[in-house]
Amino acid sequence: MHLRAPVAFVLMQPLLDVSGGHAYLLYTTLGAGGILLLFYFYLLPQAAGPSQIYALLVCTFSVCVIAAFTVGQSSLVTTTFIGFFWYLLKRRETSVSIISDIFIAALFWAVCLKPSLALIPGALLLGAKAWRPLAIGAILLLTTWICCAGYYGGWWSGFWDYLYLLNHYNNADFTPFLQRGYETEAQQHVTRMLFSLDRTLVLASCLTFVFLRWTRQLTGSGQFQATVWAFLLLSPYLLPSENWIVVLLVVEGSFFQSNNPALLAGKLLLLAAMLDLRSGVTFSWPVDAYLKWLLFAWIVTEWLLGRGPLKREVTRVEFAPRGFSEGTFGRPWLTPRRPEFGDMGYPTDHQSCTPQSSQ
Image (cartoon, rainbow, N blue to C red; front, side):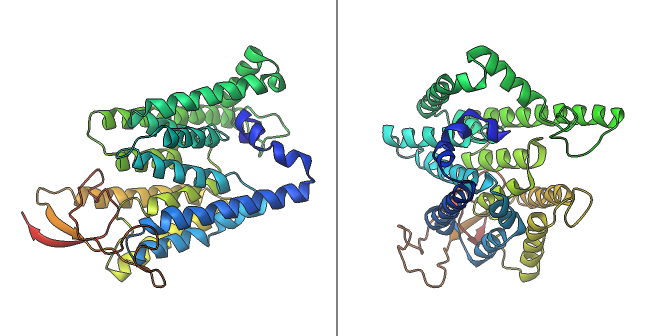
């Protein structure tokens, strides 16, 4: 689907003038460079302790990432785009400028190379009431369609044809060339029904999170985590390689901050299994889908257990990975400060916390 998206058509233009081998090499090189930048400027500075760094390593050296590099999946670049988009959108809460809004809008436009993923930045912009970058992004998308409509059969006919493709992008409605396997008439009916149900649920979830953000019942971090999980659990367009977006959730919250070695090992093993075990490769059934639900249930359980009537005041103590000095990433590694508690019962500034006293 994303290969037929107008934004993907525009972004891939430089690769059309080179051979297939050189295009693949250039694309994977850019993907690897983007991942390195994401780690250096966002993920590592946000990591609050060694346990989160271990989780980042589990994500990086996973079959999910290897497969993405092998076949050139879009998750190489979309995860990087979303990571930097979220980084700039968080900074916008304290500092607003036209330059940063243009960058946010450009990243939103770039993520639209995969339309299903565009729900994440679109919902976050709505939740933050970031109208200017949202308007700039809409103008960029409209301009893109104006320039590309001729390749899709015209302004209106191309639009409706592409919309039809999005609404019928499932195995039951594929042409024989695209079908992943034969389905009986009864199986096709179930496929279409589940496809419609999943799309309805993911759209309803994203709109619900926007409403909760507007009514101040959900923080920005909470909306980001909830929207990404809605995509991971409910999106009917999801490819296995796109599970790697969970790397952004590792440093968003404190689920992977644990002083209990056994508990941390269990979390890391579940994360590794979700990213490494794949349907059609290691199992004949969608094992990664069940593992995602299990990991999500574990996170929700910890959140519910942490929302008791007794809450504790906390003071953060950041961890500097060995080899990194104070200020390596533009901020001190040891900063005593009392964080706020947001959605999921976690500190919203992503820092590890040590209990000091009970109220």
